Amino acid sequence: PTLGGDSSAVQQQLKSVQQVQGTHSAMEALGVSGAFAAILADGSLVTWGSEPLSSAAVHDQLKNVQQVQGTLAAFAAVLSDGSVVSWGNPALGGDTAPVQDQLRNVWQIQA
Image 1 (cartoon, helix red, strand yellow):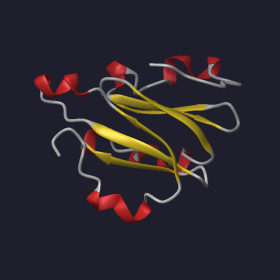
Image 2 (tube, rainbow, N blue to C red):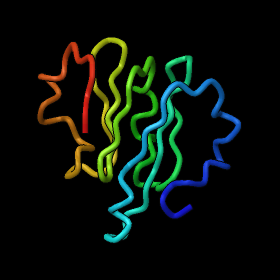
Image 3 (cartoon, one colour):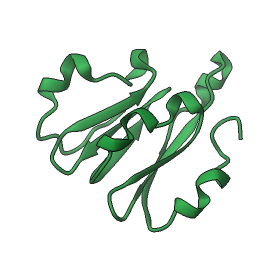
Image 4 (cartoon, one colour):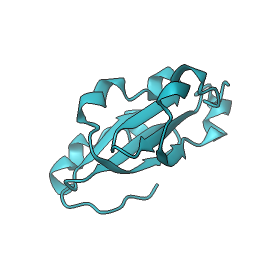
């Protein structure tokens, strides 16, 4: 559970899952717990695990999610309009603000 593996709090939401992505557990040595994000068939996203990696701050932007990718301590999601939404540790990919104007018509991301 410390690495994000306990999905019991969101179990009822995990229906018609299309993709699951996790953060890298190597951060546990640094005191950062892991997390997971699941794309559902309706394009919504469900996250569980470490609270700092919760998508709550960007939840309203996470509609029509096509892909999600996890880094050591952050996530990024590609939306159907080609935009990218990120959250998590800003130093590890959770802040796309500096390059947001370049993130248009994105089809795929890779961590």
